[in-house]
Image 1 (tube, helix red, strand yellow):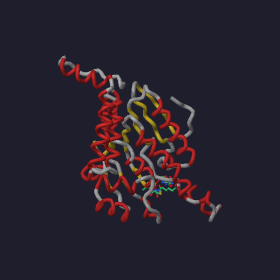
Image 2 (tube, protein in one colour):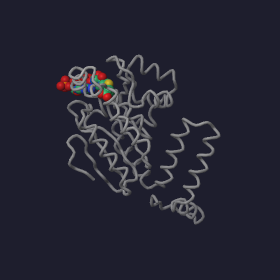
Image 3 (tube, protein in one colour):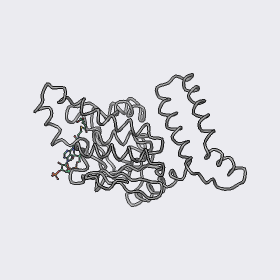
Image 4 (tube, protein in one colour):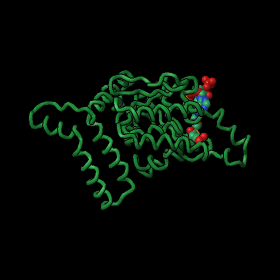
Length: 268
Ligand code: T3D
């Protein structure tokens, strides 16, 4: 695991890699370097077969406060009108991250303590499972500064919580607490802050001992299902099940059941 990043920490324990966005003095707001380092960290975690679950979290009291607004204004002012100065060019870097997460053939948990605002909130949405502490605050902060939700939030948010609530969160840009986020399906679970780290660790460990290739195929099935009709979905399901049937872990799961013992999955 790389340990030479300035704003991203990577820690591996057995099959779990924890990726920490690390600019706590600005609530882990994204500058270009942290965004680049996060991309590299996720690429490495995706490539490394010893990694079977990724936990994404923030250092200090927050998950993340979105784009760093101190350097956000610069490109627009200095290169106004030029292609390079367009936000959409910069956004492509975030798009790379959310594509990476969606296509990574292993589970990613967002562990959200404190605030998750703007693009940081939407990066949490791009994770497969979200665990919130009860001090979590979700803010689709974009409208507060006259922007639209980005980083794929406009796609994922209504699919997770429904169009009405997504419009509410995006237009009003009000805070949604961890407890409320659990109620509306924005997060999988919300736990007291004192139990947060242990809950995340237990979940990550469980996933890291699971049938990793099957998890990758499940991600492909469910994410692609959102853009397919029923017939297309059934065709995809067949292809993916053919692949799942060829895994050692599938065989192990069946053998373990028949031998009345716990399965010992290797991720292969
Ligand atoms: O570039 C592109 O591709 C476009 C992409 C845009 C994506 C976006 O994310 S747009 C949304 C950007 N984010 C925001 O608008 C949120 C701004 N921050 C806040 O509204 C508040 O800080 C929070 C609600 C997130 C948290 O409030 P609170 O009271 O818990 O903390 P605080 O005191 O406001 O913040 C603590 C420090 O972090 C503070 O610095 P200081 O005063 O101690 O020196 C604050 O300025 C700094 N900070 C917080 N958010 C950002 C930030 N600094 C730079 N950029 C930030 N986004």
